[in-house]
Image 1 (cartoon, rainbow, N blue to C red):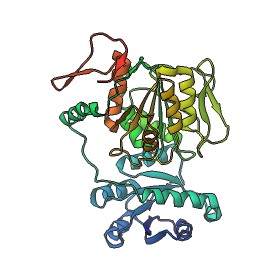
Image 2 (image 1 turned 45 degrees about the vertical axis):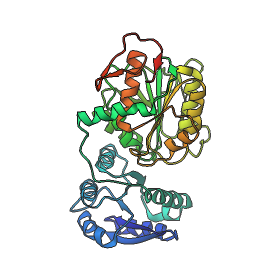
Image 3 (image 1 turned 180 degrees about the vertical axis):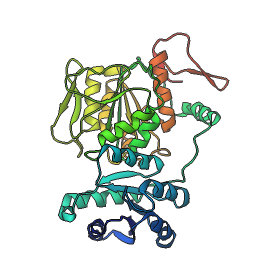
Image 4 (image 1 turned 30 degrees about the vertical axis):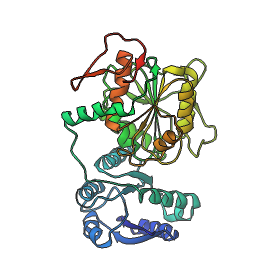
Length: 374
């Protein structure tokens, strides 16, 4: 099956080398080219693309306006291809993801990168993945009643095993991860009592933009982990770009440039395994939306150490790859929609076990002994 792609780019040079890259793949056909968002909107119903690649800066209608219009009128997977990694631009790029774009990809400064085989392979791989992504018109936030209904339904996924109170949460994500991280992290209260480590696969140069974007809505401070520092309660940490994040024998951060694991550095599995080794049963591992299998084996180590594990469900994952790998490995104790995960871990840190459900509402248990999933 041929993947139909629409290119939206105001630079003629960029259009030429992007088209040359995509034409090199027999599975991809460029069915349309547009220099502005307005022009692209008129083309979409005519050429019916499977994937749209758009730039951020364009005349008449910028990438953010264009993405919002597409998701309202003609929902399609959108890949943002941008050369800009300045702070003000990365903020806009993550607003694009919030508006409905699926992923970002760095555009080189010149067409010379069109001759770079690695660049070609990565772009083609991204488009092939996105062609299988299901997107929907932007929906309003769930009402409180709907959220409570979903929360009551979580017992379907519950385990009867007991776990101690967690001392650290480690989260892994890839494609679709920024959106999922925002949903989860913004629900953590300002008095969240333990540290959170997040490993997000992201293109070089975009990490600080991700942190700044998340920080606008999060109640907890977010920072890049520094080697030698101890993870502090109520703080969210990301590994430095292109470095693995681990913990030493005293629980302090190690940032290493050891070889990639499963093609990734930083690797979710590396962070999971290290946290499991130090925290054991008190470690919580969470796998969110993402392509590939990174994190599944690391989650297995957490489970074997007696820790608690959660995988995002398929319905709310942009790409159900990493969570699916953990589920198939049998190492996810719970499979939950993204808007329910924070609720579960907050309950565990506060009460020692999930709140009991009485008459459709949540009430804290009287005795905070070992945690139990009802």
